[in-house]
Amino acid sequence: MALPPSLTDKSASSKGSEFRSLALRIAVALGISLVITQINLEYPESYLYDLRYRTKPFSPKPENIELVYITPETVQKLTGLPSADMQTLVARKLRDSGATAVVYDFDLLETPGSTDSKNKWEEAVVSNAHFYVAGRTTPLRGDEKQLSLPEPLERINFTPAPKTSDLVNFAKDGVTRRMLLTYQQRPMLPLILASIYNPEINNLENIRGTFSFYETDQAYIDFLPARSFPSVSFEDLLQDDFAMGRYKNKVVFIGTDLGQSEGEYILTPFSREVTAMTRIEMQANILNTLIKNSAPIRAERSVGWILIVLASLLTSHVVLTMKPAQGLLMLGAAIGGFTLFSAMTFWLAGYWVPMAAPLLTAVLCYYIFIPYRLIVENRRSWEYYQKNMLLSQVEELKTNFISMMSHDLKTPIARIQGMTDVILSEKNPLSTQQREAVDTIKHSADDLLKFITSILNYGRIESQGVQLNLKSKDINNLLVDVIRKHEFLAKVKRIQIVTELEPIFPVPVDSDLMKQVLSNLIENAIKYSPEDTKILVSSEEREGRVVIQVADQGPGIPADELPNIFMKFFRSKNAKSSPIKGSGLGLYLAKYFTELHQGQVFVESSHGNGSTFTVELPIDQRGPNA
Image (cartoon, rainbow, N blue to C red; front, side):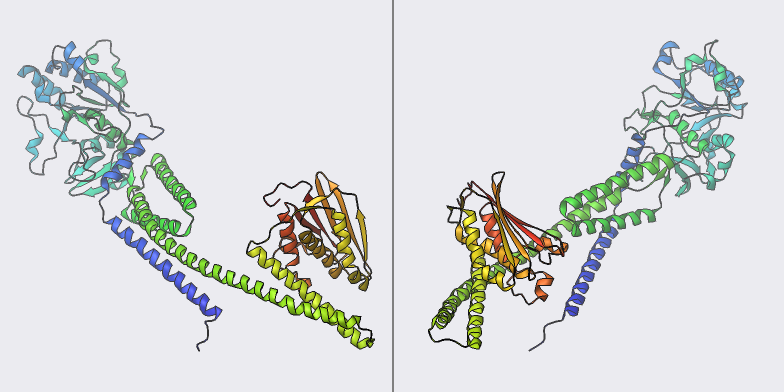
Protein backbone atom coordinates (compact mmCIF):
# COMPACT_ATOMS: atom_id res chain seq x y z
CA MET A 1 0.00 0.00 0.00
CA ALA A 2 1.36 3.39 -0.92
CA LEU A 3 2.18 5.77 1.86
CA PRO A 4 0.06 8.93 2.14
CA PRO A 5 1.77 12.10 0.98
CA SER A 6 3.64 13.99 3.64
CA LEU A 7 2.79 17.49 4.81
CA THR A 8 5.78 18.79 2.87
CA ASP A 9 4.48 17.21 -0.31
CA LYS A 10 1.04 18.75 0.25
CA SER A 11 2.56 22.16 0.85
CA ALA A 12 4.66 21.93 -2.29
CA SER A 13 1.64 20.77 -4.28
CA SER A 14 -0.45 23.64 -2.92
CA LYS A 15 2.27 26.16 -3.76
CA GLY A 16 2.57 24.71 -7.24
CA SER A 17 -1.18 25.00 -7.75
CA GLU A 18 -1.17 28.59 -6.50
CA PHE A 19 1.72 29.43 -8.82
CA ARG A 20 -0.07 27.92 -11.82
CA SER A 21 -3.25 29.81 -10.93
CA LEU A 22 -1.31 33.07 -10.63
CA ALA A 23 0.50 32.46 -13.92
CA LEU A 24 -2.79 31.70 -15.67
CA ARG A 25 -4.39 34.83 -14.22
CA ILE A 26 -1.48 36.99 -15.41
CA ALA A 27 -1.53 35.36 -18.85
CA VAL A 28 -5.26 36.02 -19.30
CA ALA A 29 -4.87 39.60 -18.08
CA LEU A 30 -1.98 40.20 -20.50
CA GLY A 31 -4.01 38.62 -23.30
CA ILE A 32 -6.88 41.02 -22.65
CA SER A 33 -4.38 43.88 -22.56
CA LEU A 34 -3.00 42.84 -25.95
CA VAL A 35 -6.50 42.79 -27.43
CA ILE A 36 -7.29 46.25 -26.03
CA THR A 37 -4.13 47.73 -27.58
CA GLN A 38 -5.37 46.67 -31.02
CA ILE A 39 -8.71 48.51 -30.67
CA ASN A 40 -9.02 52.03 -32.00
CA LEU A 41 -10.35 54.04 -29.07
CA GLU A 42 -9.59 57.47 -30.50
CA TYR A 43 -13.22 58.66 -30.27
CA PRO A 44 -13.84 57.83 -26.56
CA GLU A 45 -10.31 58.97 -25.71
CA SER A 46 -10.90 62.32 -27.42
CA TYR A 47 -14.26 62.67 -25.65
CA LEU A 48 -12.55 62.17 -22.29
CA TYR A 49 -9.92 64.68 -23.41
CA ASP A 50 -12.70 67.20 -24.13
CA LEU A 51 -14.30 66.43 -20.77
CA ARG A 52 -11.14 67.51 -19.01
CA TYR A 53 -11.36 70.86 -20.80
CA ARG A 54 -15.00 71.32 -19.81
CA THR A 55 -14.30 70.58 -16.16
CA LYS A 56 -11.13 72.65 -15.95
CA PRO A 57 -11.62 74.86 -12.88
CA PHE A 58 -9.51 77.77 -14.12
CA SER A 59 -8.47 79.46 -17.38
CA PRO A 60 -5.57 81.96 -17.71
CA LYS A 61 -6.40 85.41 -19.01
CA PRO A 62 -5.23 85.85 -22.63
CA GLU A 63 -2.92 88.71 -23.65
CA ASN A 64 -1.54 90.31 -26.85
CA ILE A 65 -4.60 89.40 -28.95
CA GLU A 66 -7.68 91.41 -30.00
CA LEU A 67 -10.58 90.39 -32.23
CA VAL A 68 -12.63 92.54 -34.60
CA TYR A 69 -15.93 91.08 -35.83
CA ILE A 70 -18.09 91.88 -38.81
CA THR A 71 -21.52 90.93 -37.47
CA PRO A 72 -25.13 91.16 -38.69
CA GLU A 73 -25.38 94.38 -36.67
CA THR A 74 -22.38 95.70 -38.62
CA VAL A 75 -24.10 94.95 -41.93
CA GLN A 76 -27.30 96.57 -40.67
CA LYS A 77 -25.59 99.77 -39.48
CA LEU A 78 -23.37 100.09 -42.56
CA THR A 79 -26.20 99.01 -44.95
CA GLY A 80 -23.98 96.22 -46.24
CA LEU A 81 -20.59 94.63 -45.74
CA PRO A 82 -17.78 97.06 -44.94
CA SER A 83 -16.56 98.63 -48.18
CA ALA A 84 -12.99 98.80 -49.43
CA ASP A 85 -12.75 102.44 -48.33
CA MET A 86 -13.82 101.47 -44.79
CA GLN A 87 -11.27 98.64 -44.77
CA THR A 88 -8.59 101.07 -45.88
CA LEU A 89 -9.50 103.50 -43.10
CA VAL A 90 -9.44 100.77 -40.44
CA ALA A 91 -6.14 99.40 -41.79
CA ARG A 92 -4.50 102.83 -41.46
CA LYS A 93 -5.90 103.30 -37.95
CA LEU A 94 -4.55 99.93 -36.84
CA ARG A 95 -1.16 100.71 -38.43
CA ASP A 96 -0.99 104.03 -36.63
CA SER A 97 -2.13 102.47 -33.31
CA GLY A 98 1.08 100.46 -33.07
CA ALA A 99 -0.52 97.03 -33.60
CA THR A 100 2.07 94.30 -33.91
CA ALA A 101 0.17 92.58 -36.73
CA VAL A 102 -3.21 92.62 -38.45
CA VAL A 103 -4.73 89.42 -39.82
CA TYR A 104 -7.69 89.26 -42.20
CA ASP A 105 -9.56 85.98 -41.98
CA PHE A 106 -12.53 86.33 -44.32
CA ASP A 107 -13.21 86.36 -48.06
CA LEU A 108 -11.70 89.64 -49.25
CA LEU A 109 -13.32 89.30 -52.70
CA GLU A 110 -16.77 89.81 -51.14
CA THR A 111 -15.77 93.32 -50.01
CA PRO A 112 -17.79 95.90 -52.02
CA GLY A 113 -16.12 98.91 -53.65
CA SER A 114 -14.71 100.31 -56.83
CA THR A 115 -11.47 99.14 -58.43
CA ASP A 116 -9.75 102.34 -57.32
CA SER A 117 -10.92 101.81 -53.69
CA LYS A 118 -9.72 98.24 -53.71
CA ASN A 119 -6.35 99.30 -55.13
CA LYS A 120 -5.94 101.74 -52.21
CA TRP A 121 -6.84 98.99 -49.76
CA GLU A 122 -4.40 96.66 -51.52
CA GLU A 123 -1.69 99.29 -51.23
CA ALA A 124 -2.37 99.72 -47.50
CA VAL A 125 -2.06 95.96 -46.97
CA VAL A 126 0.95 95.29 -49.20
CA SER A 127 2.94 98.27 -47.94
CA ASN A 128 2.87 96.96 -44.35
CA ALA A 129 4.91 93.85 -43.69
CA HIS A 130 2.79 92.98 -40.65
CA PHE A 131 -0.54 92.79 -42.48
CA TYR A 132 -1.52 89.23 -43.30
CA VAL A 133 -4.37 87.41 -44.97
CA ALA A 134 -5.09 83.97 -43.48
CA GLY A 135 -5.29 81.33 -46.17
CA ARG A 136 -7.66 78.45 -45.66
CA THR A 137 -5.69 75.97 -47.81
CA THR A 138 -2.16 74.58 -47.77
CA PRO A 139 -1.04 74.25 -51.41
CA LEU A 140 1.84 72.04 -52.42
CA ARG A 141 5.25 73.52 -53.05
CA GLY A 142 5.44 74.82 -56.62
CA ASP A 143 1.75 75.67 -56.60
CA GLU A 144 2.08 78.96 -54.68
CA LYS A 145 -0.14 80.75 -57.23
CA GLN A 146 -3.08 79.53 -55.17
CA LEU A 147 -1.92 81.94 -52.46
CA SER A 148 -2.70 85.04 -54.55
CA LEU A 149 -5.98 86.90 -55.13
CA PRO A 150 -7.26 87.91 -58.57
CA GLU A 151 -7.34 91.54 -59.71
CA PRO A 152 -7.67 94.17 -58.37
CA LEU A 153 -6.18 92.55 -55.21
CA GLU A 154 -3.62 90.45 -57.07
CA ARG A 155 -0.66 91.73 -55.03
CA ILE A 156 -2.13 90.48 -51.74
CA ASN A 157 -0.77 87.06 -50.83
CA PHE A 158 -2.25 84.52 -48.45
CA THR A 159 -0.29 82.98 -45.60
CA PRO A 160 -1.65 79.46 -44.88
CA ALA A 161 -3.62 79.27 -41.61
CA PRO A 162 -6.08 76.40 -42.12
CA LYS A 163 -8.29 74.82 -39.49
CA THR A 164 -7.93 71.13 -38.71
CA SER A 165 -10.99 69.03 -37.97
CA ASP A 166 -10.98 65.40 -36.89
CA LEU A 167 -13.00 64.15 -39.87
CA VAL A 168 -10.99 61.39 -41.55
CA ASN A 169 -8.36 60.69 -38.90
CA PHE A 170 -8.18 60.81 -35.10
CA ALA A 171 -11.63 60.99 -33.41
CA LYS A 172 -13.62 61.51 -36.66
CA ASP A 173 -16.14 63.74 -34.88
CA GLY A 174 -15.43 67.02 -36.67
CA VAL A 175 -13.96 68.71 -33.57
CA THR A 176 -10.92 70.96 -33.95
CA ARG A 177 -8.25 69.98 -31.44
CA ARG A 178 -5.01 70.31 -33.40
CA MET A 179 -3.07 73.10 -35.11
CA LEU A 180 -0.79 72.90 -38.12
CA LEU A 181 2.67 74.31 -37.48
CA THR A 182 4.30 73.51 -40.81
CA TYR A 183 3.36 71.85 -44.08
CA GLN A 184 6.17 70.65 -46.33
CA GLN A 185 8.50 72.64 -44.07
CA ARG A 186 6.55 75.87 -44.77
CA PRO A 187 5.54 77.58 -41.50
CA MET A 188 1.90 78.40 -40.95
CA LEU A 189 0.72 81.92 -40.10
CA PRO A 190 0.22 81.38 -36.29
CA LEU A 191 3.81 80.14 -35.99
CA ILE A 192 5.10 83.25 -37.82
CA LEU A 193 3.10 85.58 -35.59
CA ALA A 194 3.95 83.78 -32.33
CA SER A 195 7.68 83.91 -33.08
CA ILE A 196 7.47 87.72 -32.78
CA TYR A 197 6.66 87.32 -29.07
CA ASN A 198 8.45 84.05 -28.42
CA PRO A 199 11.48 83.63 -30.75
CA GLU A 200 12.39 80.28 -29.21
CA ILE A 201 9.57 78.52 -31.07
CA ASN A 202 11.32 79.13 -34.40
CA ASN A 203 12.95 75.83 -33.46
CA LEU A 204 10.13 73.28 -33.55
CA GLU A 205 11.93 71.14 -30.99
CA ASN A 206 11.23 73.85 -28.41
CA ILE A 207 7.46 73.67 -28.91
CA ARG A 208 5.58 71.47 -26.42
CA GLY A 209 3.74 68.43 -27.68
CA THR A 210 4.76 68.57 -31.36
CA PHE A 211 4.23 65.47 -33.48
CA SER A 212 4.54 64.63 -37.16
CA PHE A 213 1.59 63.56 -39.25
CA TYR A 214 2.20 62.85 -42.94
CA GLU A 215 4.13 65.94 -44.15
CA THR A 216 3.01 68.25 -41.35
CA ASP A 217 4.21 69.20 -37.92
CA GLN A 218 1.29 69.57 -35.53
CA ALA A 219 0.45 70.18 -31.90
CA TYR A 220 -2.70 70.29 -29.79
CA ILE A 221 -4.38 73.63 -29.10
CA ASP A 222 -4.60 74.83 -25.52
CA PHE A 223 -8.18 76.02 -25.87
CA LEU A 224 -9.83 78.70 -23.78
CA PRO A 225 -13.63 78.88 -23.48
CA ALA A 226 -15.49 80.78 -26.20
CA ARG A 227 -15.55 84.58 -25.86
CA SER A 228 -12.38 84.57 -23.75
CA PHE A 229 -10.58 87.09 -26.01
CA PRO A 230 -11.47 90.81 -26.00
CA SER A 231 -13.39 91.84 -29.11
CA VAL A 232 -15.21 94.76 -30.76
CA SER A 233 -17.46 95.19 -33.77
CA PHE A 234 -15.96 96.52 -36.99
CA GLU A 235 -18.14 99.63 -37.01
CA ASP A 236 -16.69 100.69 -33.66
CA LEU A 237 -13.29 101.20 -35.28
CA LEU A 238 -14.85 103.73 -37.67
CA GLN A 239 -15.74 106.03 -34.80
CA ASP A 240 -13.41 109.02 -34.40
CA ASP A 241 -13.47 108.79 -30.62
CA PHE A 242 -12.64 105.08 -30.45
CA ALA A 243 -9.56 104.43 -28.28
CA MET A 244 -7.13 102.84 -30.71
CA GLY A 245 -4.39 102.71 -28.08
CA ARG A 246 -5.71 99.34 -26.90
CA TYR A 247 -4.18 97.69 -29.98
CA LYS A 248 -0.59 98.76 -29.27
CA ASN A 249 1.71 95.71 -29.43
CA LYS A 250 -1.32 93.47 -30.08
CA VAL A 251 -2.16 91.08 -32.90
CA VAL A 252 -5.54 92.01 -34.34
CA PHE A 253 -7.70 89.43 -36.10
CA ILE A 254 -10.50 90.73 -38.34
CA GLY A 255 -13.15 88.21 -39.28
CA THR A 256 -16.84 87.55 -39.67
CA ASP A 257 -19.52 86.27 -37.31
CA LEU A 258 -22.48 86.45 -39.66
CA GLY A 259 -23.93 82.97 -39.03
CA GLN A 260 -24.28 82.33 -42.78
CA SER A 261 -21.71 79.57 -43.33
CA GLU A 262 -20.26 76.68 -41.36
CA GLY A 263 -16.87 77.73 -42.69
CA GLU A 264 -16.93 80.69 -40.29
CA TYR A 265 -16.97 78.39 -37.24
CA ILE A 266 -15.39 75.33 -35.68
CA LEU A 267 -16.43 72.66 -33.19
CA THR A 268 -14.35 72.78 -30.01
CA PRO A 269 -13.67 70.52 -27.03
CA PHE A 270 -16.02 72.80 -25.09
CA SER A 271 -18.98 72.51 -27.44
CA ARG A 272 -20.12 70.63 -30.53
CA GLU A 273 -22.60 73.27 -31.61
CA VAL A 274 -22.16 74.45 -35.21
CA THR A 275 -21.44 78.02 -34.11
CA ALA A 276 -19.40 77.03 -31.02
CA MET A 277 -16.41 79.24 -31.91
CA THR A 278 -15.48 81.55 -34.78
CA ARG A 279 -12.48 81.01 -37.01
CA ILE A 280 -10.67 84.11 -35.77
CA GLU A 281 -11.13 82.96 -32.15
CA MET A 282 -9.62 79.63 -33.19
CA GLN A 283 -6.67 81.56 -34.67
CA ALA A 284 -6.43 83.52 -31.42
CA ASN A 285 -6.33 80.26 -29.39
CA ILE A 286 -3.61 78.84 -31.62
CA LEU A 287 -1.55 82.02 -31.37
CA ASN A 288 -2.04 82.22 -27.59
CA THR A 289 -0.96 78.55 -27.24
CA LEU A 290 2.24 79.17 -29.22
CA ILE A 291 3.11 82.43 -27.45
CA LYS A 292 2.78 80.76 -24.05
CA ASN A 293 4.12 77.47 -25.42
CA SER A 294 1.34 75.66 -23.51
CA ALA A 295 0.27 72.99 -25.98
CA PRO A 296 -0.98 69.82 -24.24
CA ILE A 297 1.47 66.91 -24.38
CA ARG A 298 -0.08 63.59 -25.29
CA ALA A 299 1.48 60.63 -23.50
CA GLU A 300 3.51 58.15 -25.49
CA ARG A 301 1.82 54.93 -26.56
CA SER A 302 4.05 53.01 -24.17
CA VAL A 303 2.44 54.86 -21.25
CA GLY A 304 -0.98 53.73 -22.45
CA TRP A 305 0.24 50.13 -22.73
CA ILE A 306 1.61 50.23 -19.19
CA LEU A 307 -1.67 51.60 -17.85
CA ILE A 308 -3.63 48.91 -19.71
CA VAL A 309 -1.49 46.13 -18.22
CA LEU A 310 -1.75 47.60 -14.72
CA ALA A 311 -5.53 47.94 -15.06
CA SER A 312 -5.91 44.31 -16.20
CA LEU A 313 -3.67 42.94 -13.44
CA LEU A 314 -5.31 45.03 -10.72
CA THR A 315 -8.84 44.13 -11.82
CA SER A 316 -8.09 40.41 -12.08
CA HIS A 317 -6.45 40.43 -8.65
CA VAL A 318 -9.35 42.33 -7.05
CA VAL A 319 -12.07 40.19 -8.65
CA LEU A 320 -10.45 36.85 -7.91
CA THR A 321 -9.00 37.44 -4.44
CA MET A 322 -11.21 39.93 -2.61
CA LYS A 323 -14.76 39.84 -1.30
CA PRO A 324 -17.29 41.26 -3.82
CA ALA A 325 -18.24 44.36 -1.83
CA GLN A 326 -14.64 45.01 -0.86
CA GLY A 327 -13.52 44.42 -4.45
CA LEU A 328 -16.10 46.84 -5.89
CA LEU A 329 -15.04 49.45 -3.35
CA MET A 330 -11.40 48.89 -4.25
CA LEU A 331 -12.08 49.13 -8.00
CA GLY A 332 -14.22 52.22 -7.52
CA ALA A 333 -11.48 53.87 -5.49
CA ALA A 334 -8.85 52.91 -8.09
CA ILE A 335 -10.94 54.25 -11.00
CA GLY A 336 -11.79 57.42 -9.08
CA GLY A 337 -8.16 57.97 -8.13
CA PHE A 338 -6.98 57.35 -11.70
CA THR A 339 -9.61 59.75 -13.08
CA LEU A 340 -8.63 62.45 -10.59
CA PHE A 341 -4.93 61.89 -11.35
CA SER A 342 -5.56 62.19 -15.11
CA ALA A 343 -7.59 65.38 -14.63
CA MET A 344 -5.04 66.99 -12.32
CA THR A 345 -2.08 66.24 -14.59
CA PHE A 346 -3.98 67.79 -17.49
CA TRP A 347 -5.21 70.85 -15.58
CA LEU A 348 -1.88 71.60 -13.91
CA ALA A 349 0.74 70.34 -16.34
CA GLY A 350 -1.10 70.03 -19.65
CA TYR A 351 -0.23 66.33 -19.80
CA TRP A 352 -2.75 64.09 -21.57
CA VAL A 353 -2.84 60.72 -19.82
CA PRO A 354 -4.85 58.13 -21.81
CA MET A 355 -8.01 57.09 -19.97
CA ALA A 356 -10.32 55.23 -22.39
CA ALA A 357 -8.16 52.13 -22.84
CA PRO A 358 -7.38 51.57 -19.11
CA LEU A 359 -11.04 52.09 -18.14
CA LEU A 360 -12.25 49.74 -20.88
CA THR A 361 -9.66 47.20 -19.75
CA ALA A 362 -10.94 47.36 -16.18
CA VAL A 363 -14.55 46.88 -17.32
CA LEU A 364 -13.75 43.99 -19.66
CA CYS A 365 -11.55 42.23 -17.12
CA TYR A 366 -14.26 42.62 -14.49
CA TYR A 367 -16.95 41.07 -16.67
CA ILE A 368 -14.61 38.34 -17.89
CA PHE A 369 -13.26 37.31 -14.49
CA ILE A 370 -16.55 37.62 -12.58
CA PRO A 371 -18.17 34.62 -14.41
CA TYR A 372 -14.97 32.64 -13.88
CA ARG A 373 -15.05 33.47 -10.17
CA LEU A 374 -18.73 32.50 -9.99
CA ILE A 375 -17.97 29.15 -11.63
CA VAL A 376 -15.08 28.54 -9.23
CA GLU A 377 -17.12 29.54 -6.19
CA ASN A 378 -20.11 27.45 -7.28
CA ARG A 379 -17.83 24.47 -7.70
CA ARG A 380 -16.24 25.18 -4.34
CA SER A 381 -19.67 25.56 -2.73
CA TRP A 382 -20.73 22.25 -4.21
CA GLU A 383 -17.58 20.61 -2.85
CA TYR A 384 -18.19 22.19 0.55
CA TYR A 385 -21.78 20.98 0.45
CA GLN A 386 -20.67 17.45 -0.33
CA LYS A 387 -18.02 17.56 2.38
CA ASN A 388 -20.52 18.98 4.84
CA MET A 389 -22.97 16.18 4.06
CA LEU A 390 -20.21 13.63 4.57
CA LEU A 391 -19.08 15.28 7.81
CA SER A 392 -22.67 15.44 9.04
CA GLN A 393 -23.07 11.75 8.38
CA VAL A 394 -19.77 10.99 10.11
CA GLU A 395 -20.74 13.23 13.05
CA GLU A 396 -24.10 11.50 13.33
CA LEU A 397 -22.45 8.08 13.22
CA LYS A 398 -19.91 9.21 15.81
CA THR A 399 -22.61 10.58 18.12
CA ASN A 400 -24.70 7.44 17.74
CA PHE A 401 -21.65 5.28 18.38
CA ILE A 402 -20.65 7.26 21.48
CA SER A 403 -24.18 7.18 22.85
CA MET A 404 -24.57 3.48 22.15
CA MET A 405 -21.19 2.53 23.59
CA SER A 406 -21.59 4.79 26.63
CA HIS A 407 -25.07 3.44 27.34
CA ASP A 408 -23.94 -0.15 26.96
CA LEU A 409 -20.93 0.49 29.20
CA LYS A 410 -23.09 1.65 32.07
CA THR A 411 -24.44 -1.88 32.65
CA PRO A 412 -21.08 -3.60 33.32
CA ILE A 413 -19.96 -0.61 35.40
CA ALA A 414 -23.09 -0.88 37.49
CA ARG A 415 -22.29 -4.56 38.01
CA ILE A 416 -18.73 -3.69 39.07
CA GLN A 417 -20.05 -1.12 41.54
CA GLY A 418 -22.60 -3.58 42.84
CA MET A 419 -20.00 -6.31 43.32
CA THR A 420 -17.65 -3.93 45.15
CA ASP A 421 -20.49 -2.93 47.48
CA VAL A 422 -21.26 -6.59 48.11
CA ILE A 423 -17.62 -7.34 48.87
CA LEU A 424 -17.29 -4.40 51.21
CA SER A 425 -20.49 -5.39 53.05
CA GLU A 426 -19.40 -9.00 53.61
CA LYS A 427 -19.12 -10.10 57.25
CA ASN A 428 -15.80 -11.77 56.63
CA PRO A 429 -13.22 -9.08 57.23
CA LEU A 430 -10.92 -8.16 54.35
CA SER A 431 -7.26 -7.67 54.72
CA THR A 432 -5.96 -4.15 54.41
CA GLN A 433 -4.48 -4.89 50.99
CA GLN A 434 -7.76 -6.42 49.76
CA ARG A 435 -9.81 -3.45 51.01
CA GLU A 436 -7.48 -1.02 49.31
CA ALA A 437 -7.83 -2.98 46.05
CA VAL A 438 -11.63 -3.00 46.28
CA ASP A 439 -11.69 0.73 47.10
CA THR A 440 -9.51 1.36 44.07
CA ILE A 441 -11.89 -0.63 41.89
CA LYS A 442 -14.87 1.24 43.32
CA HIS A 443 -13.30 4.70 42.80
CA SER A 444 -12.21 3.76 39.29
CA ALA A 445 -15.73 2.57 38.50
CA ASP A 446 -17.13 5.83 39.89
CA ASP A 447 -14.72 7.88 37.75
CA LEU A 448 -15.57 5.83 34.69
CA LEU A 449 -19.29 6.28 35.35
CA LYS A 450 -18.85 10.05 35.60
CA PHE A 451 -16.92 10.06 32.34
CA ILE A 452 -19.58 7.97 30.59
CA THR A 453 -22.31 10.24 31.97
CA SER A 454 -20.50 13.26 30.53
CA ILE A 455 -20.20 11.53 27.17
CA LEU A 456 -23.91 10.66 27.23
CA ASN A 457 -24.83 14.24 28.06
CA TYR A 458 -22.59 15.49 25.27
CA GLY A 459 -24.26 13.07 22.87
CA ARG A 460 -27.68 14.31 23.94
CA ILE A 461 -26.57 17.90 23.34
CA GLU A 462 -25.19 17.10 19.90
CA SER A 463 -28.42 15.38 18.94
CA GLN A 464 -30.44 18.25 20.50
CA GLY A 465 -32.10 15.80 22.85
CA VAL A 466 -31.80 17.72 26.15
CA GLN A 467 -35.13 18.96 27.51
CA LEU A 468 -35.60 20.82 30.78
CA ASN A 469 -37.80 19.41 33.52
CA LEU A 470 -38.31 22.57 35.56
CA LYS A 471 -39.50 22.41 39.16
CA SER A 472 -39.21 24.95 41.94
CA LYS A 473 -36.20 24.01 44.05
CA ASP A 474 -34.19 25.60 46.81
CA ILE A 475 -30.74 26.16 45.35
CA ASN A 476 -29.21 25.97 48.82
CA ASN A 477 -30.56 22.44 49.28
CA LEU A 478 -29.01 21.42 45.96
CA LEU A 479 -25.69 22.90 47.04
CA VAL A 480 -25.79 21.06 50.39
CA ASP A 481 -26.48 17.74 48.62
CA VAL A 482 -23.63 18.26 46.17
CA ILE A 483 -21.18 19.32 48.89
CA ARG A 484 -22.13 16.29 51.02
CA LYS A 485 -21.29 13.96 48.12
CA HIS A 486 -17.84 15.55 47.75
CA GLU A 487 -16.93 15.76 51.45
CA PHE A 488 -14.96 12.52 51.36
CA LEU A 489 -12.85 13.70 48.38
CA ALA A 490 -12.19 16.99 50.20
CA LYS A 491 -11.20 15.25 53.45
CA VAL A 492 -8.68 13.09 51.59
CA LYS A 493 -6.83 16.31 50.58
CA ARG A 494 -7.57 18.02 53.91
CA ILE A 495 -9.53 20.72 52.06
CA GLN A 496 -12.14 22.65 54.04
CA ILE A 497 -15.35 23.60 52.19
CA VAL A 498 -16.75 26.79 53.67
CA THR A 499 -20.35 27.71 52.87
CA GLU A 500 -22.03 31.12 52.95
CA LEU A 501 -25.60 30.43 51.87
CA GLU A 502 -28.15 33.21 52.17
CA PRO A 503 -31.87 32.35 52.26
CA ILE A 504 -33.25 32.25 48.72
CA PHE A 505 -36.72 31.75 47.33
CA PRO A 506 -37.25 28.54 45.35
CA VAL A 507 -36.17 28.82 41.71
CA PRO A 508 -37.53 26.80 38.74
CA VAL A 509 -34.66 24.52 37.70
CA ASP A 510 -34.01 21.04 36.40
CA SER A 511 -32.49 19.64 39.58
CA ASP A 512 -30.59 16.80 37.86
CA LEU A 513 -28.92 19.13 35.37
CA MET A 514 -28.22 21.83 37.92
CA LYS A 515 -26.67 19.27 40.29
CA GLN A 516 -24.32 18.29 37.46
CA VAL A 517 -23.37 21.96 37.00
CA LEU A 518 -22.65 22.50 40.69
CA SER A 519 -20.97 19.09 41.03
CA ASN A 520 -18.58 19.85 38.14
CA LEU A 521 -17.58 23.20 39.63
CA ILE A 522 -17.08 21.90 43.19
CA GLU A 523 -15.31 18.73 42.06
CA ASN A 524 -12.93 20.77 39.86
CA ALA A 525 -12.21 23.11 42.78
CA ILE A 526 -11.31 20.10 44.97
CA LYS A 527 -9.26 18.33 42.30
CA TYR A 528 -7.15 21.34 41.32
CA SER A 529 -6.70 22.86 44.79
CA PRO A 530 -3.59 21.98 46.79
CA GLU A 531 -3.87 20.22 50.13
CA ASP A 532 -4.71 22.14 53.31
CA THR A 533 -6.60 24.92 51.50
CA LYS A 534 -10.14 26.21 51.59
CA ILE A 535 -13.00 26.35 49.08
CA LEU A 536 -15.73 28.94 49.53
CA VAL A 537 -19.22 28.13 48.23
CA SER A 538 -21.69 31.02 48.46
CA SER A 539 -25.17 31.87 47.28
CA GLU A 540 -27.21 35.08 47.29
CA GLU A 541 -30.02 36.86 45.53
CA ARG A 542 -28.92 39.88 43.50
CA GLU A 543 -31.11 42.05 41.23
CA GLY A 544 -33.63 39.36 40.41
CA ARG A 545 -31.03 36.64 39.91
CA VAL A 546 -29.60 33.84 42.02
CA VAL A 547 -25.81 34.09 42.17
CA ILE A 548 -23.75 31.03 43.10
CA GLN A 549 -19.97 31.26 43.47
CA VAL A 550 -17.31 28.58 43.95
CA ALA A 551 -13.92 30.08 44.86
CA ASP A 552 -10.76 28.03 45.36
CA GLN A 553 -7.13 28.68 46.24
CA GLY A 554 -5.74 26.62 43.40
CA PRO A 555 -3.06 27.50 40.80
CA GLY A 556 -5.47 29.63 38.75
CA ILE A 557 -5.90 29.74 34.99
CA PRO A 558 -3.49 31.55 32.63
CA ALA A 559 -5.03 34.61 30.95
CA ASP A 560 -4.47 33.25 27.44
CA GLU A 561 -6.51 30.12 28.27
CA LEU A 562 -9.52 31.87 29.86
CA PRO A 563 -11.40 32.43 26.55
CA ASN A 564 -11.26 28.67 25.83
CA ILE A 565 -12.02 27.29 29.28
CA PHE A 566 -15.67 26.46 28.45
CA MET A 567 -14.94 24.85 25.07
CA LYS A 568 -15.69 21.18 24.71
CA PHE A 569 -12.73 18.82 25.16
CA PHE A 570 -10.50 21.72 26.18
CA ARG A 571 -8.02 21.16 28.99
CA SER A 572 -5.37 23.63 30.07
CA LYS A 573 -1.70 22.84 29.65
CA ASN A 574 -1.23 22.52 33.41
CA ALA A 575 -4.15 20.07 33.67
CA LYS A 576 -2.80 17.92 30.86
CA SER A 577 0.61 17.67 32.49
CA SER A 578 -0.85 16.84 35.92
CA PRO A 579 -1.89 13.35 37.11
CA ILE A 580 -5.50 14.60 37.41
CA LYS A 581 -7.66 12.93 34.79
CA GLY A 582 -10.55 14.58 32.97
CA SER A 583 -12.57 14.51 29.77
CA GLY A 584 -12.62 18.26 29.05
CA LEU A 585 -16.44 18.16 29.04
CA GLY A 586 -17.27 19.22 32.60
CA LEU A 587 -17.16 23.00 32.13
CA TYR A 588 -18.64 22.72 28.64
CA LEU A 589 -21.65 20.88 30.05
CA ALA A 590 -21.89 23.30 32.98
CA LYS A 591 -22.05 26.24 30.59
CA TYR A 592 -24.55 24.53 28.30
CA PHE A 593 -26.90 23.47 31.10
CA THR A 594 -26.71 26.92 32.72
CA GLU A 595 -27.52 28.71 29.47
CA LEU A 596 -30.36 26.22 28.95
CA HIS A 597 -31.78 27.73 32.14
CA GLN A 598 -31.37 31.21 30.58
CA GLY A 599 -28.49 31.85 32.96
CA GLN A 600 -24.81 32.39 32.52
CA VAL A 601 -21.57 31.10 33.96
CA PHE A 602 -18.21 32.85 33.92
CA VAL A 603 -14.85 32.68 35.62
CA GLU A 604 -12.48 35.14 37.22
CA SER A 605 -8.93 33.94 37.62
CA SER A 606 -5.31 34.94 37.47
CA HIS A 607 -2.40 32.56 37.31
CA GLY A 608 -1.29 31.56 40.82
CA ASN A 609 -4.18 33.26 42.65
CA GLY A 610 -6.99 30.75 42.43
CA SER A 611 -10.24 30.82 40.46
CA THR A 612 -13.81 31.94 41.12
CA PHE A 613 -16.61 30.40 39.06
CA THR A 614 -19.93 32.26 39.10
CA VAL A 615 -23.32 30.88 38.07
CA GLU A 616 -26.23 33.29 37.63
CA LEU A 617 -29.80 32.02 37.26
CA PRO A 618 -32.96 34.07 36.73
CA ILE A 619 -35.51 33.75 39.50
CA ASP A 620 -38.41 33.86 37.04
CA GLN A 621 -37.94 31.94 33.77
CA ARG A 622 -40.15 32.42 30.75
CA GLY A 623 -38.05 30.65 28.14
CA PRO A 624 -39.08 28.23 25.42
CA ASN A 625 -38.29 25.26 27.65
CA ALA A 626 -40.04 26.59 30.75
